[in-house]
Each structure stands twice: as C-alpha cells, then as structure tokens.
Image 1: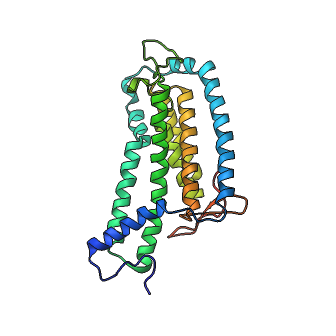
Image 2: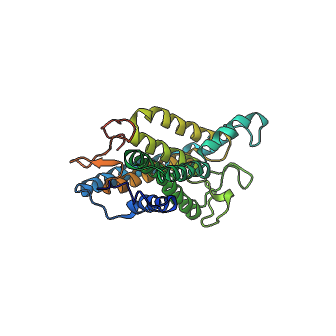
Image 3: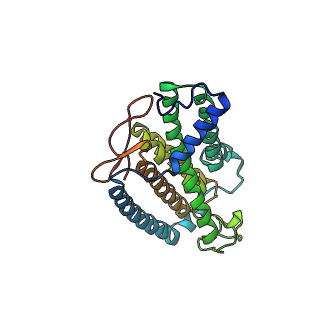
Length: 277
C-alpha cells in the first residue's frame, strides 16, 4: 500500500510534480478537522483583542506625545553615512522575504517530486512549515496595504514640516502610506512565525524584528507609532495564520485549553510549549 506522500510511483516526473504541488495547495483550503479548534478560536480572539487594544493605545500615545519630537531628532533623510542602515532595512522588506520563501517552496516541490516514501514526507513536512511562514508574512502584508490606503498617513516631513497628524485617507501614494510600517509588519510576522515553529530562535528573531523597526525610524521612513502599529498587525496576522494551520492539523496541534503548539518538525524535535499567546 502506498503511503500518503507516494503518488503513483511509476508515473513520470511531471505528474509527480503536479501531484505534489496540488496536495501542498489543497491541504491549505481543506475543511478544518481539529476537534479543539473552537477553543483555539476563542483564545485567538481574546489575545488578538487585548493585543490590539494595547497596541492601539500605545500608538495613539506615541502619536500625540512623541512622534513629532522623535522625527526631529533623527539625521536628515539622505545622509551619506546611513548607507549601512539602508542595506539593513531591506532585510525586512516584504517583497524580498516573500520572494526568498516563495523560491524555497518551488525548490522543495521540484526536489520532493523526484523522491518517494520517507524522504518525500520529510521535505513535504518542511514545505508545510515554509508555507506557514510565507502566508504569515503575505496575509499580514496584505492587511497592512489595506490599512495604509484607508488611513493615508503622511510619512515624516511630507508636506514640508514635522506633522504627526498629516492624514489624507484613500490618497493611495507612497508618501501617504506611513501607517502601519510595512517593514515592521513583515519583520514581526516572520519573527512570530519562526518562533512559533522553533521557540529556541525566539530571542534572535525578535531582535531581528526590533532592529528592522529601528532602521525605519532612523531613515525617517516612519513615525514611532507607525512601527508599533506594524508590529501589532504582523503579530496578529501571524497568529491568525497559525490558527488556520492548527485547525487543519498542519504543523501545529491544539491543547485542551486552546493553546496552539508546534508539532515536532520533520528533521528534529521542537519544543512542545506554546511559543506565543
């Protein structure tokens, strides 16, 4: 009897590749099956609500009391000595992160299509986790783009002066796409996703996310409240994607109290404790 990852072993490579790709996509949209998904949904709703309330309150305080002061303390935009910061900040650009992870998914599919049995299962297990990371960033970035368009906050010094309340809703240009910070969204979504799968990397990943956040301030690309809002959107977005995967038993399990925990990975065991709210 063939295992779940062996699809007509004698079929040609194109058929194997098509089958592997189809199964990888189909698993994401199949009906949720976890018996404790309702408990996890309630836990997600609670945590998302209090995170959103706390994050929104902090963003408003920063907007009123600190944003204008902070951007006036930063070096002028275009300062030559900031070139290392400009390079570093690109490590949080959602297009770059998604391109790298998307390429990784394609390579995994190409290799897995030529394998069978346990070796294919190992690669597909890794592919599911890479799908989770990819979608955590993609879904969060999509939500951020909608918010940017609706809110229409001007970036620092757009209009010629330091004005923390420069809003033109639905303006739709890059100059009025400051809130939330897209880099902060992508960096925190990726940090949460990686930490959810491999908790030992939590300190490293959130340090990376905070560094990306700081580069956006130094480069005068955003106000402090923008990056706080971005961190919130990225975290809640990744939490929502984690629930989607857990409800379908993909990479995560749900405990009796609704906590979502990582299932041991395909190449090594991961911690069983929940890595985040």
